[in-house]
Image 1: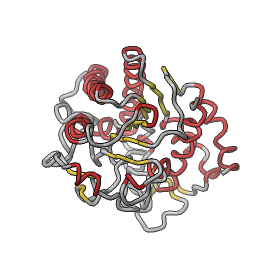
Image 2: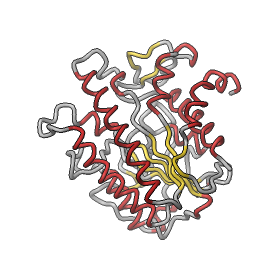
Image 3: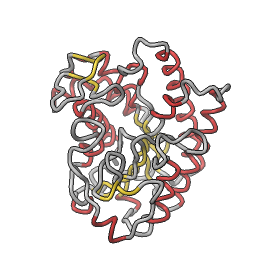
Image 4: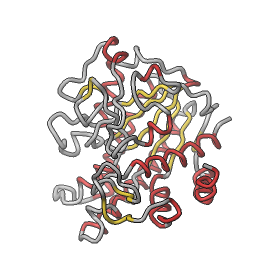
Length: 316
């Protein structure tokens, strides 16, 4: 770990400087409850979830009882990588009941999710958008699952599907305006989460998906690069706006675009020998990509390490 930290040092210093727009008291070591909303990069499989999509339920059946949510278990090594993902590494909650973990992971992310089904088509009829994930939490979990202010942190990582799903969408003629519309839906959901007790937040931007195997070297590469840049710029602006409108909130950002880019630009430093292809296999050692759009467990582990360093640096 010291050697890994040394390799990441220039990036960690950059991330730490820009970590917080506004912050009340925050301490990562004291954080016992972690909430997550997002897409396949974040989802974990639950025994009561839609297989390979969610921890609990889907948009066709969002409801659950207190008994169900507390009995639901994380199935180990069932994520969008070949094994564990970043939020499992970050929390140490790899399997079993979240309530049994030292840092309880309550994960409402749904694989294939966009921000709003009112703005982009669902990948499947059962896909739960980010807006609906928050609605599910507010309706069925906010009065059930613990979220004490000084012991709770919420992570938001969305936009990977949005930036890709819009590539060949002829109905969008003004992308800058579209991303603004998306951000309004996004931060309406964030505000709803805040108003229902989630006061400490980390917003993660979109990584350089233009460098994934599905896009690299194709005509979509420059389009996706532009989409990601515009999305991330809009996210940065709206995150700052949310912090300004909610001064009692703790608002932090994590630059996954910088982390992915740093690793992809220095692959051998992190043990990667292939950053352009993928290996959807049991042991993708040396590969950055597990399939044409999702990274391997090794990447998730590095993301968690960089994020943990930032959270520790931001702790009071």
